[in-house]
Amino acid sequence: MSLTNEQLRAIGIAERVGGSASLLGCAFIVTTYCASNAFRKPVNRLIFYASFGNAFAAVASLMSRDGVIAGPRSALCLAQAFFIQYWMPTDSLWSFCMAVNIYLTFYRRYSAEDLKKLEKWYFLFCYGLPLILATTLSLIKTTGRGRIYGPALIWCSIAEPWQFLRLVCFYGPVWVVSIATFAIYATAGVRIWRQYRALKTAKDELPVHRATGVTRSVSFDVTATAAKGSGSGPAMLYSTSIESQHSRTRSGLDIQANKHNAMRSYFRYSFLFFIAMVATWLPSFVNRIYGLTNPNKPKFGLNLAGALVLSLQGLWNAIIYTSTALPIFKAQWASIVKSRSHRRSPTRVTGEDAAEVSLDDVRFDDRYDAGSTSSLAIGPPLESSVVQPGGA
Image (cartoon, rainbow, N blue to C red; front, side, top):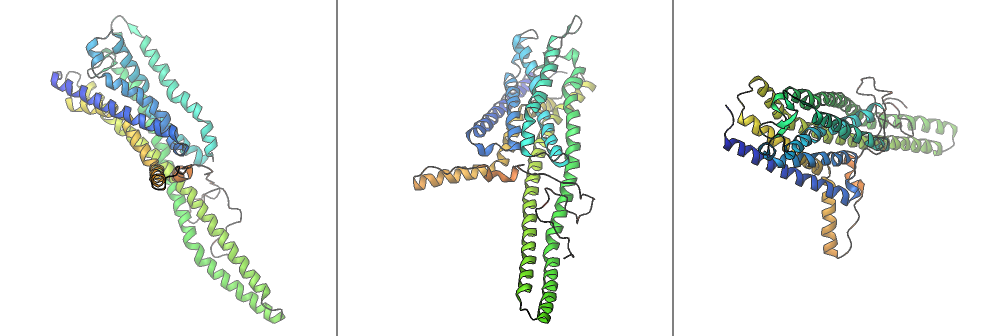
């Protein structure tokens, strides 16, 4: 039993609504990103690059069922199928690139500048490989099955006679990349948690042990000075030296804490991008599995959900982009309000307002990572060595 005309019309409306929302989201990302340098942080840059693929995928969604109605040989149907095969999977590839950034920062100690140099290769990977596959599929045609691209119920994609290729060439690569992405996030997440616990333990233990050490050392020097009859000068100097060392240690831990928080923020937002990608593809994948097992009994709910969520890629990414740049938006708005109230030019907002999602100068050192929560496995090393709790 096929879907009714009313059901097909509802699916078409969902595709156009989702595509329109995605186009608006992509326009918002591109406009704000180009308007200010403050938005050009590592995670935002990759979302910005991904928005181009989202925009073209949204255009394919806006075509809705017009390509199906125009016929399998029409230019509209072939163009829609090509756009869906080419642009929709790129979102998962950009998610993988974000995970690769996490891996390189943790295990290869890449800086923000090092990661930025890789972005041209990310472009080739995310937009080059799908182009090769989409172009190859567009050229294949047989006498028995016809072209690979053609009507596929809710829009033009890989045609029904070739539907086994939807798993191999469309859903398959997406889920292979998704599994690899999740593996990186799972490994990095465990390590971030361990380093957070190590840093927290070091900061909690430092004041107690350090205070005891200062008192004991000052008392010894005062006694020795009294015996020699040379006054309290050396004891005071020694006390000042110990307190200065303690201050530098505390300051170093605070610096490491700030860098660790930046890394956690980047991890959190890139992982949200991954979750949005999985939520986008899961309903459509379930619908495809159901379609293979029940080819003559399409489910309206599954087709509607698949068409809607795939059309909303650009909107989900715009929401994540906005959440990462929220401090910048607040600072920009405060600057506008202040300039209007005092009738002066707005204050320039710099990237410091988004430090929480910056990877600048963040490096991690695993030389001391032995699994102990009391070891500080975060680099770079402090200028002055950190004295272990309980030592002088």
